Image 1: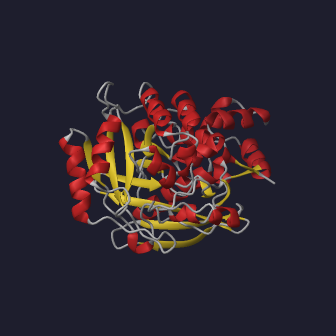
Image 2: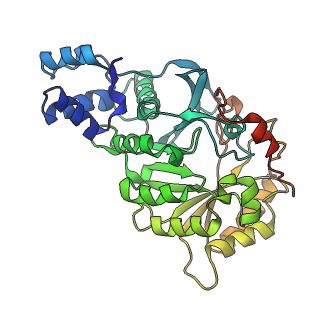
Length: 369
């Protein structure tokens, strides 16, 4: 099988090219053709030596993911479903705004964390995506959108690893993908504009701070361990005290001077004023330094298997008011693409669940304890 060059960050591509007897600058040229210009046809890479182009034709390819479907929302959001083989499909979402274009990228086929308010987790987990499969989502979306708009200017300014899967449980494939997103010879994205969202894989948060510090978002969803154990099962392994310390430590390396906490608003579960007051105490403990953070309150997007309800807009506003009155920056995420099931928590794709379905059902978490 030919080597998919989307699997390499620049260092990886340099090593591959040197193994073919080529100099480093040829790898840089090739990297620019692939990622800056979105070119997959080696014969069109006119400043490469003919001998290198022939080597590329013989040994390599830029292999995008097959598109199974595309859905366009009334609000301009676009969702693509990609085939990643073995009966698995993933979803990627582009969200256009006046001052930015954000791509929501998947890192796994399914998800092993199993948060009960997330449609992806309800399917279980099949496998990690490769670096090429992660980058192929950005490569395809950027080249497709440029062609549609008739522009050579960058369309995607922000990438959020908030699609299907827990990115930090696919660390070895994630980091080269992030490094390519940031590389000035590729997409040249700012570290502030690339966000990894995690449910709290504490050891990998520490590794990311040294290997590739980008903006960090943490799926919090509860102010105490008892409730978070039920909403985010990973909390059983990495409880809140460990998670918050990891967040504090990450700030020394982060491109932003705060951590974003995501909080899905579930009616009657985690949305009372008492919950909000407990969150204030959590990030602003009386005898310690406050944890620099902002809260992003996310209206729950219901799906049949969840058995959960969205908090009313009045309850969300009241909850936000408690946080804001304590001096914590708080926003309410605007729901985008919900008419095409592209909103937060709705990405389901089509996953051949490799987990123990019977076992998962036996361990179904009771939310309304």
